Image (cartoon, rainbow, N blue to C red; front, side):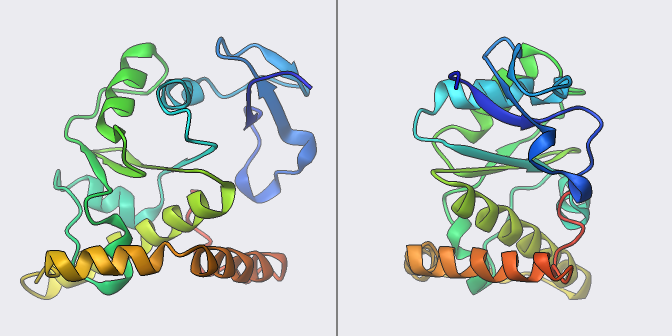
Length: 203
């Protein structure tokens, strides 16, 4: 097996991906294993992997709530206990650099992420990273949920953000391995039953 990054081949939809759709690519996007071509939009992912040796997985999508929230041009407010994991751990890219096919987009997005584990990309979507597939997916689903809650609250009135000390403790609890892994296992069971509660996450 070569050294590189796993991604899906161009043209495969999230709802139909199997192991046959996976490609192992190097940092020049040359296919090392698998059949097909990688999506050129994953080039900016390579920037993140290069700059963050601690990162083992990336989730980047344009789900409905995050897509809508990204149009507001604002950082994510931490205003609910379930979003505390993102307190001081969610970056913000304030300008859309265009379709992310080139190295400039990779530089900008990786800089917006920095040493954090998530970032809102204005007029675009989001990126979540982690040390495993489990915690990365957990962050991505939680960020979509957080954005949805913020949009609903903004429509009703003024958002009251959480006290920083409480947010720090909430982040610690929500990122406990037992909570992360149990949540991922639950979502996996639902997905196998085609009952996944965030079915539009990958749209």
